[in-house]
Amino acid sequence: MQHARAGRLISDLLVSNEAAAEIRVHGIGAFLLQHFRLMAEDSEQEQARLARLAARTGLIAACCTGLAMLITFGSLGWLLWTGVMALSVGGTAVIAIRTGSNALDNLVRQVNFMYEEALFVGDLDRISAEATERAIPAGGAPLPECIESVRFKNVTFTYPGDDQPALRGLDLTIPAGKIVALVGRNGCGKTTTSKLLAGLYLPDDGHVLLGGVSTAEADRHALFSRVALVSQDYYRWPFTARANITIGRPEAPITDDWLDDAVQYADAHPIIDDMPRGLDTLLARGYKGGHNLSGGQWQKLAIARARYRAGDILVVDEPTTSLDAESEQDVFNKIRDLAATGQTIVLITHRLHSVRHADLIYYLDDRQVTEYGSFADLMDPDVTPAGRFRASYDLQRRQFQPDTAQQLPPAPSADSPPPTPRS
Image 1 (cartoon, rainbow, N blue to C red):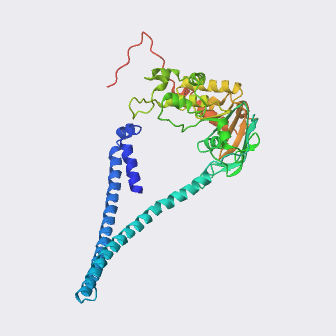
Image 2 (cartoon, rainbow, N blue to C red):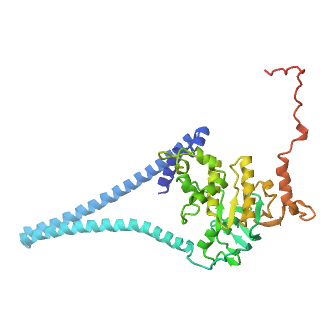
Image 3 (cartoon, helix red, strand yellow):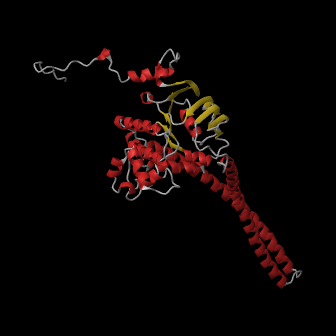
């Protein structure tokens, strides 16, 4: 089964539109074909082994059956020959033997089939029980109408199968109507924090409190309705552009005002105008009439989707990774405008220049908060002596400053001789 699934995966990759560029440029086709061939050969060998085993078992069973039938009908013939059994009784015995043999053969087949199916049913039963344990419970404590703050109180969380916790004793507070930035190195727990806030995960220890109500006790569906999420791994739905935006609030009737506002907010109207059928363009290249978008264009649709959802808390995780500098600055300006209207913004980014206007910045390191404060506080060595945020910010800033040791030569004047061409 595993070989069959892996073989289908590799065959799908070989014809995948998303992987085509790297397969061609990096010459991965031969590598994938080699592994597909190896798995196919292993699968063929296993099937041959099972076929030989089935043939041997069937041959032994057929020999035993033949021997039993020979003894049975031999005994029956002897009884008829000696006159111990009447011919009419012998005919009835033959019919009974053949009927019983067919019934016994069918019984063995059905028992074998039941055993095979029981293996799958056992897996299904185990998975269903685990799904029931992991399912989001219906109901729970209601959330307050106005959430004044979100507080992480000594939160620890470990992903299933991992030995090291993704968060360890995390404490932070997100005040309502403010821009709160979470920054730090890769793997420090920023994205995990955002998913705990959205209710996608529950902490192993500690509490995530929204207006004083723990996410472990709150009505999770009510919590989901309060949060809009633009994550790094936003999904590219193979639907129309209209559906990709309005799927942010699927239970609400689609209104043109909300849709236009979301498109304008994400600056996605040039993308929509360039599509063959506008908002009704199918964004699935593998289908008739399907259209493909670039990474930056998809990211703008994801931002429009979050805007259309209009949650009380907007969590944006690296919202500008695929955008150009002008679009990036425009997104951050609009994020500030949202905070001015009272929406709570949780901003996760590696581009520290974009958090200058955040009301509160948390610097995460070693899966917990090591520094926090305003941008001015974190850049002031008297307020924040350790200066981990300051060191990271200065490191990024130096990348955009000219290197004085390697200045470009001055531009030649009109009277200067032309440069000598190099061979």
